[in-house]
Amino acid sequence: MTDNPDVIVIGAGPAGYVAAIRCAQLGLKTLCVDKWLNTEGKPSLGGTCLNVGCIPSKALLQSSEMFEQANLNFAEHGIKIKGATIDLEAMMSRKDKVVNELTQGIAGLLKVNKVEFVSGTAKLLTENRVAIVPTVGEKQVLSAENVIIASGSSSIELAAAPLTEGLIVDSTGALSFDEVPERLGVIGAGVIGLELGSVWRRLGSEVVVLEAQDSFLSICDQQVASDAQRTLKKQGMDIRLNSRLRETNIISSDKRQVEVVYEDDKGQHKEVFDKLIVAVGRKPNTDHIAEHAADLVLDERSFIHVDEKCETSLPGVYAIGDVVRGPMLAHKGSEEGMMVAELIAGHHAEMDYDLIPSVIYTHPEIAWVGKTEQQLKASGEKYKSGIFPFLASGRAKAQGDTSGMVKVLASEETDRVLGVHIVGAHASELVAQAVIAMQLSASAEDLMLTVFAHPSLSEALHEAALAVDNRAIHIAAKRGR
Ligand code: FAD
Ligand code: NAD
Image (cartoon, rainbow, N blue to C red; front, side):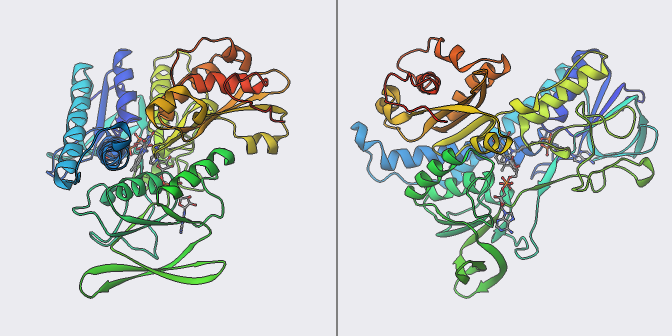
């Protein structure tokens, strides 16, 4: 190990590895430590995102979506397939292959950029010293002028549903079932519950999702959330709101199952499932990240306390990604990583937390950026809204996928776009146009005056912007407030 790096990065997830690469690009001698080992005991870079998060979940979402398409929609296009079946082992191997190629890719990127990578566990000590216990070899203590903590997050566990091998699992377990459960329970109708619930429903499970809150996807614009909820229900996902988990019991008769006891307004209920996924949020990995004497300040929810520049309470120590406040999203962590690298190199850098897009990769996808209608109402800001349904889009019709809409919210006073909310096919791609527009402070009129290719799903964004001013062409859209 280099004994005098300029920067030590703890964690090689999307926050840490991006920070490390950018630091190295800026000429800083950079060392990155990560403790992740794959099932073969080998170092695997990319953190939660690449190993057990974004990438494997999207690989399975893609495979399961293709299976569902083949069974339900191909015939409408005149393509006849008799009895499409699943080879779950092959589907899982494909997912693992995608993960392996990408994690190895990160190792290659660190090497090319001359970031020194150490497989091991790091802990912050006093005075910017870091103790590193390598996977192989002796413990070493290094010091650096700058330390970036990017130790990520882990699934929250529930005392009422303790993880039980192959039966009660977190998101990681739910990414590698060895058979399709007949009845699958999911605790939490959040992002993970809906995405992984969708995967297994498409592959044949009867899925029941129990959600403690009485509103569906309260983080989303509620009009878009209701639309998505209706579609998911039509697909067969049984989402029960206001359902509070009380206990789980393992049943061992013919087969091992899990009984779930929950309560709603009507009283107590019981359901028996073949598997149960617990997806009730994630917590920051801060338990052993710094020795007590280092005096690293955490907030009341155990996230590392940082300012808007990701500076911690200690000079020269930064923290980024899931381990600090803000949405737990890979791209948010990566952007913070780049900002911090620039700051360490002495450059000006900042990021706009209001313009981080969010996506839920169900089908249809749900994607948004900026303020929701309920947020604007709560803040008293006067706004106009325009909506365009994909039902009226020629491209959506041609694709046979017309569910959902685009909604544009703009300031009544300045016409500036304040939020864009999309539920529909490829919403994850469409939302990027809204992010760029908002990054450049576009008005709804700017979007109206932009030419969009025909036929494309993007035209729905154009029409929704036109609808803000009651000018939509392909539908009689009414202006909002
Ligand atoms: P992590 O990715 O958690 O990486 C932290 C790294 O630090 C790990 O490799 C860990 O081994 C290492 N580490 C921790 N402590 C130490 C230590 N003491 N010493 C050395 N190394 C240490 N986000 C999206 O934006 N889009 C998605 O589609 C998406 N899908 C997801 C699906 C699932 C199932 C899950 C669970 C998450 C998903 N996320 C998604 C969230 C995303 O994975 C996280 O926001 C992202 O990985 C956070 O990046 P990070 O670098 O902060 O932390
Ligand atoms: P989440 O916060 O999205 O959802 C958790 C849900 O569980 C909430 O709706 C909450 O009300 C509910 N809940 C909490 N306790 C409960 C209980 N006892 N009983 C029933 N319901 C309960 O969390 P998640 O789905 O676990 O995802 C964790 C993080 O990972 C999220 O912050 C998300 O940003 C990130 N993630 C992102 C993506 C993506 O970007 N597509 C995908 C997966 C995960």
